[in-house]
Image (cartoon, rainbow, N blue to C red):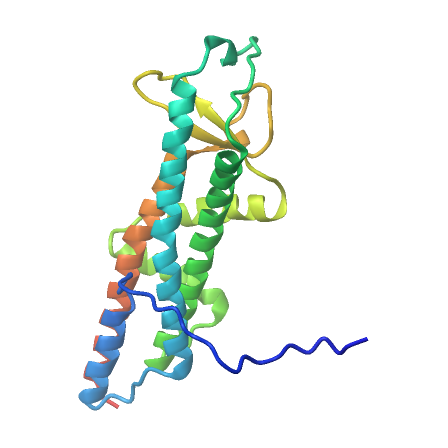
Length: 246
C-alpha cells in the first residue's frame, strides 16, 4: 500500500478576485493611522489572514443571495401557471407541483449554504473583533465575544434578534433535518412567500414547522446592518487606543 502522501504543486496559477466588500479596509486604515501616531499597534499576520478570509466570505454572500432570488423567480413562474388541482388547503389534499430537479435541489443547496456562510462569517468577524481588542489591550475570552458584539450593535441602535434566528435555523439544518420547499398562496395573487419547511407535513399547525423566505431576508438585512455597526465599533475602539498612546 502507498503512504497516501499528497504531492506539493511545483507549478501553478492563482485566480484573481476583483472588487468585493471593503469592510475590513477602514479597520486596517485606523490601525495604521494609530501606529503612525505612536501607538503600539500593528496588523499581525493572523489578523491579516483573518481579514482576507472575512472578505472572501463577504464576497460570497451576495452571490448566494442572487442565486436564491433567481431560483425563487423561476419557481414562482411555475407555481403561477399551475392547475388548481395542485393546491392544498386545510382538509383538502392537492398534488405537488413538479419542477426540474436541478432547480429544486439547487435552491435547497443555496438556502442551506446561505445559513452556513452567514453563521461562518459571524464567527470569523467575532474572532477578528477579539484580535483587534487584544491588540488594543482589552482581553476578550472567546465566550465573551458574542455578548460583547451584540452589546456594541445595540448601543449603536441595531437589532440583534436575527443572531438567535440564524443560530436556530443553521443548527437545525446542520444537525437535525433537511429542507423542503412549499409556496404560501394565502395572499395570491398580491403576494407569494416561499416556505422552507423543516419537515414534510401534509398540514401546517405550528410556525416552527417552517421558515419563510421573508424571515431569511430579515436575517440577511440584520447581518448587513450589523456588519456596518461592528466596523464602526472597531474603528472607534482603535481610535481611542491610538489617542491613548503607547
